[in-house]
Length: 294
Image 1 (spheres, one colour):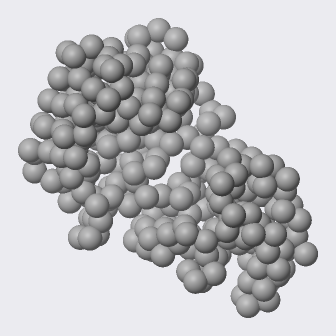
Image 2 (cartoon, one colour):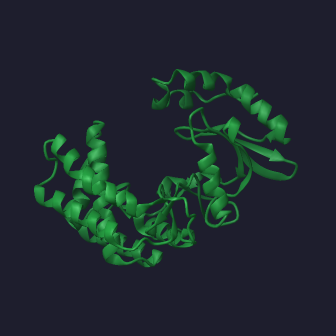
């Protein structure tokens, strides 16, 4: 039977989650049961992210990973996103048992992500993957335009509740950017609403493959802000930031002005979210982006 890594048990999400901690105790039995059900043999050391356990397995000559998510996670939505892209830029889904929170996935190289690649090259690859993922969208996927429309109302209220963490001019620019996005025609394209360096892995069929995508419909450049703020400390001078922005835009094939607006909207959104939760590092990077793009 597998051993649950102590580092997984120490993840912050379990501190106040009694059901989650009980699930951790049952994981060895759950893995054993799922392996028996799908004819799998454990084939390596157990891995994990912040939420799910990942077990390297084999089924005959096929090398895969068994992923188990805790109670409460929306595995059905996650598998629907993988099925929608069906291996186009994303990890292949081989099997799923949503009631058990289990998925069987193509095995990738979990030791190599875009986080470890030079930042300018990595952000161009994120842009290229954005273009690959921009296939016709699912009609019931959440719209990025709706997200922008919600921000028009949310930004002023949250900004005031936090005693004005930016200048009023920056707040006005964020509301104006969200308004421009919300009033534009909706792009009928698929978007990964959680695309960042650590969720792009090497190995498998493709040089780089997206894992854990969140399916949205709308503007492909929705998450360009996250691509910038997550490694902004490596972009030491402003020209480096603008070069990274241009590299993403060119690789993704998206309009520069619309991408600029999304940098502003997503940076303001994350700034307010982070301050509400006591974060310190990420809000600082968002303030820098807002100063450059707003």
